[in-house]
Amino acid sequence: MLHESTEQIFPRVVEEFKDVFPEELPGLPPDRAVEFSIDLIPGAAPIAKKIYPMNKEELAELNKQIKELLSKGFIQPSASPWGAPVLFVKKKDGTLRLVIDYRVLNEVTIKNKYPLPRIDQLFNQLGEARVFSKIDLRSGYHQVKVKKEDIPKTAFRTRYGHYEFLVMPFGLTNAPAIFMDLMNRIFYQYLDKFVIVFIDDILIYSKSEEEHEKHLRIVLQTLREEQLYAKLSKCEFWLDQIPFLGHIIMSF
Image (cartoon, rainbow, N blue to C red; front, side):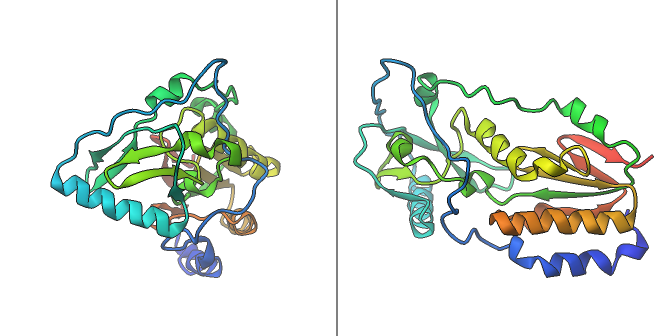
């Protein structure tokens, strides 16, 4: 339930940082300390799989989504010897999600051992927190570049051509670890003080409303400086209980 005294504050804070909540990602992400790399097991050779069949509706959607990815600069035409097939998965709202089937590439990829935090241990940091906000990044993986030499390994084959990703695609085995590494570096000085990060989800927690305004501004300013962008419709602000990572977090 929203605290009455904050009904005027949090819209003002969000408005102040509205550039952090664009309707679409503005284009290719900046160069970052962390890039997505794909290290292969010794002896691994390029693999190209047959294109999966699609019906008329799926082909129309595929053509549309390829054009969108090209216009954003997220993919480019490829001459790579690698080539993963693509398919669609129907989402709850009936729309189609494009999936690159990277299973074969994942099998020959050396697994990144960067630790993902245990969810139960994350919540031990909350202490006497009373006010919570949650920020969900917009297409978080697409906000990280692929290392130049590894771009050809991301190639995928379609009815409408052969393409490769310049940004980190979904479906690759080390993507969560790479993104976790990036977020931990960015928010390191605030972790376990008033910020919890799990991949592309950010929880801000505070003992008071006044403190929360300060904490929220710090997080939003950090996102602005790092040119990381959030999806406003999936964010929640200034609550005394909030869903996060499949749990309901509340003040005591």
